[in-house]
Image 1 (cartoon, rainbow, N blue to C red):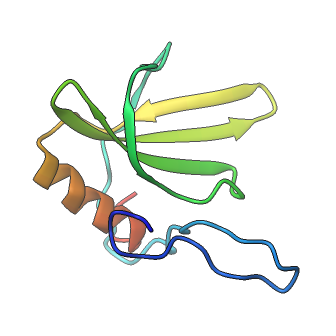
Image 2: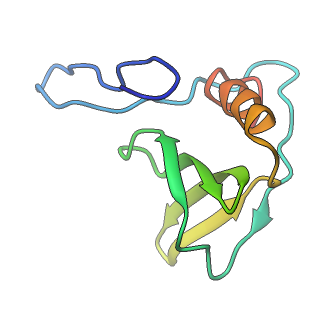
Image 3: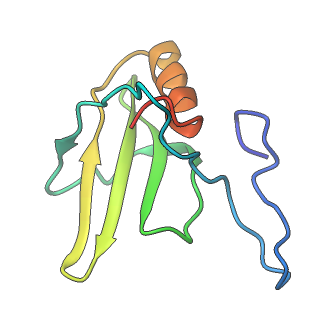
Length: 105
């Protein structure tokens, strides 16, 4: 089960299971200030994540007392990794919720 209470999977017609998907962008969607990370932090704790079936995946991460969202976009030239600003747990959780519901991107 994901930390947000969602079971994190749903059966598909082909009996495969998927993780949580980000909802479509809503009107008035908040812009997240993404910052390119190269190389990305390697010692982070992933608290929640979206489904691996999409080209872009999101992870709610913790590192050294700070929390942030990592966005990984897979493409023909390799992965591009961006991070949201590092904030306290409550703010990161609220941003994560807005991202999943399509109110932030």
